[in-house]
Image (cartoon, rainbow, N blue to C red):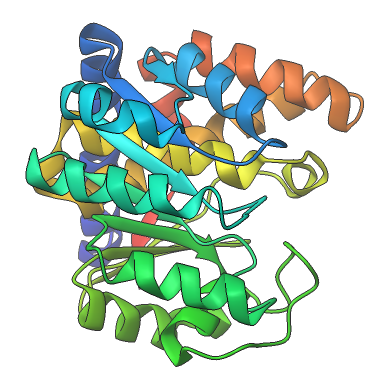
Length: 280
């Protein structure tokens, strides 16, 4: 075997072992993940967290933040069905999480679609999330702080188109930035990692992006000091569950069911044989 190929295989084995270790820790610890999220995604996000072994809490009332949020293990904020009434709770929860030393993850859904939405997302970025996970168009909009070409919640850009924007946003925000696409990109502003797992039909199921952001929150909860590795591991694990689910699915509806089942049943052999992570 060529030395370069040997190094790649060793790298893959290391990533696979790390991803399996984190999933095992998640299953053992069952971290409490608070999700302030949109109405469309609540069901799939909660079921994704449950099937992975975490404990979801879909609590978004500002009246509960001070009592509840200090006791969580991670917070996931998703602005999908954003309205002015929800913003104070999002701000308050992120501040309380930061004060308690708990990681929080931002999903800036359709960030460039309107001035109201962009302003809200930029304000949340300023409140120091541990990880920002979006599609190419969302990350470009945040990086440029400007409205951009977007098709609602769908991306008008491939993930690779947003690599420089992701690195810039990571450097300016201090967050790990993940860009979902055919290849998922994860960066701390300097190092860039690509995840090559998943199937295209996952895009035909609403809230799969939201669900993987929640899974990232759970993975970061069990390894907060290595947020880049935890984020890449969550993306690869979710992608592998999608691949395994696709082997049994007949379309988007059955893929949704088999995706959740596959995540619940995922074992080390599947992770070791299917995980595809590389340095970019």
